[in-house]
Image (cartoon, rainbow, N blue to C red; front, side, top):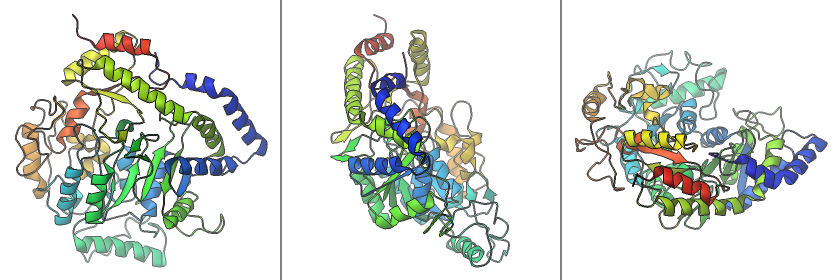
Length: 501
């Protein structure tokens, strides 16, 4: 049994695949060929967006979106810790600061109520409202390669900027972090302005449409409107899904998706795309993906990246898209069968009214970590592959240890034992280390109960920082999910998951 069956899909479209690839080989335009433009037009129409800008990967799509919005040092970008690293990685690459926001216990997507609290905490520079990264809580000044540039405390320090020019993130507010003259001064001025302000500036939020289910864009959009945040939709897993009649990829200032082979619409390598209705942003995105190109390849009007979508991948995606709408409906059938077969056996995904999941994954929630381990072992013995998305939330990852949420200091039991030198975090870190790992599952009934996240009024039975993400990481696992999974295979899976009579 395959976790994702790409071979069955390929058999259906083999003739069209061969014809499309042969066409590219014949015209020889391997970079920015006509298939790229055809794919952009086709998918823009499918999503309902004015512009689609193809690029080299889903990661590049997110990076380009942030660059087009001129996100840089001193900016706070809110996102979930329960996702793939790329979502937060691109924020740090630009010298901005990821501010993590816990997820909803039912949908596993970013929780709008927690987003409201997180934004308020950044605006007031008060981690008692919501857990903040060290950079937001206290500007003690250092440069950490994993999280970008942090200005120094001393306003008279002439070394600010000049020390890091050439070694820091190469993208910042349209001014190069390397170079001379006006650009160098602009960069240094930007850092000094952040320093004087003393706290982060809320700039954007990146909701992640986890497992194929779009986030709650009405509620998130309302929070964003109140606080002047740009919404960037991470639709890497949800392409083909819907939210209240609109396709995933149609939300926010810019939406980004991935065509990694395992995605609902996947190529045979890496590729991605940005969608927007904003003409100015579309122009910036097209420029950024080709080294900041202006009127021609040797006219560079901004700092950009080499993020082009190659023509062969576009040709492959055009072939795959010919059956994609049908495959999305087949995924709905597979999910419905799972729901029926597993009802009363284990907690299955919840799809709220008005939503349609693309079903990138079909994820289950065990009652406890030990039960997850036992069930996955039983399935493996029965020849059924499984996967865990995601075993360690981003705030626990070593790459983000500099943010002060826990990172490399997390203990083997999954708890945070943080030794922060930041006086604003010391008390909260101590509280977290005392209680994490000792609490029961937060939502065995699909409810979070009295757990309010991390605040001065937090229930002592709840883990520190991001309790729902922590709990999910311990209990969640995914079953095989693809359009060609038949009923007999699903019946076998259900039988293996059923308790003994």
